[in-house]
Image (cartoon, rainbow over all chains, first blue to last red; front, side, top):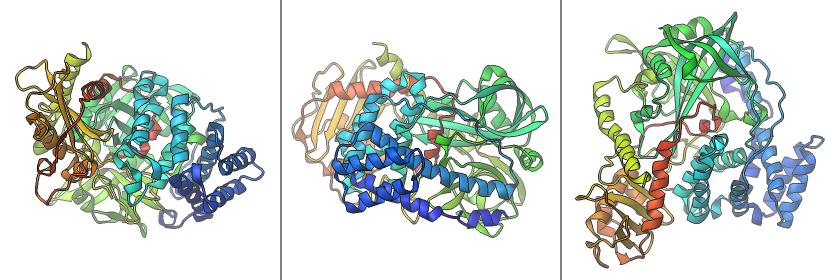
Length: 446
Length: 169
């Protein structure tokens, strides 16, 4: 079952991706100087929306692009079409996995989305679209980053600030993009359309009382942000739900590796539960309709020991999943926590139920290594889909090292590396955080 | 392709959503050069003074013409810099940039041609450039301000596009 879901492409996948590729290639070239091929690719996108509410705005935006008079609203329609196409890819891939795992998923309630991107960012995104990725130079790239400090002052714009900073850093590193041999067309179009369609709508959330059982920690990082996302199960009443809880800190590029864990001093209960393999009692903490436990340290108490492998073996199979909000659906948003066993492993891939799944690069902030993965017999990981195939991102493995059974988890290092050599290196590198704080204290308050 | 850009998939990064294009930088000691960046067509940064803890130097090297500038945060020109020779602050800046980004990425950005195994400094053909102290210093302050921003516990799903990976060797 799982093998089929991991090796067979859903019906219509390649046709849908071809439409998206056509749009992405037009953005590489620039909407300010589209040729016949690009206009045809955009017209093909419009055609699949015939009869839907997007048909008219998308068709109109293509007319304006051809006439060279595109406005923000036209770009929003185009970005919306792209989001819808990728949302359908997400739904097809996710339902294939759910079918294989027998996962029941609660539907997402209908909410009204309201796009709330400030004019300065909208004009930057318009300039990028008109110029095309190939036309991006140092100046255009940097002008996006310059808007970020203002955004960061407003907590409601944190998502946009983190996204724009990540995209701008890549454009600055690549500028002048015309000299790159390859442009990451899908990725930059993802980030661009995501920024344009970012909505401020509140996702419905309700307080819960129960027990949170961590399965593992996933780390995300760009030059000015680091995020730990803890996947786990929430026992509340008779229902066990698959949830995740997420903490994001601002940082600078020179803070990296295991030192990033130092950026979360405000969540000792969460980090302690990761490092100590414990459950957490939560009382009144809110969980959203999309399955996000909104972490509040004041509503959390360290619980009893809970081995993530036991949690996964006993309870993950029957736990209820959640659905993402429509604007968040994208193949890159699939991160399905799974327990894999009985596979044959190499450092680069796992062969699971006859399907070969690539192993993601492992973060330097945790103890997992390719050698450990290739000698493992069980793995808690996240199944992900990218560039036409499935990946697994290991969060924990059980392996045999020098004839001894060991279990290693990314979150083992949440309170600092547990391995002597790495701890020593972290102690030296961690001084970076202190040096910058000292400099900040001395220079910022003048 | 830029040596600093990750090319993870055999099919290349063109149709990938989640291959970050800026790899994490190499960790380095920050005491001497707390901040440096490749920005606005320059390698620019802040170099701590060896003698006065309250003083920093602001140094930069421009891309292409290798225009050098170095002055204190109070805009006094660095005494060690001449039109043909880089001061110790600029030498320190280049050396730390090599540690942070790798020699190839800095060389590409500044268009410095060097033979294998040589330092960036040896490939420099310096000219003098106007001081950028005010801009670089405010860039440093923006950089430091990130450390003052509170932690967020909202989902921030955009970070799914930025998986943490290994630090390149």
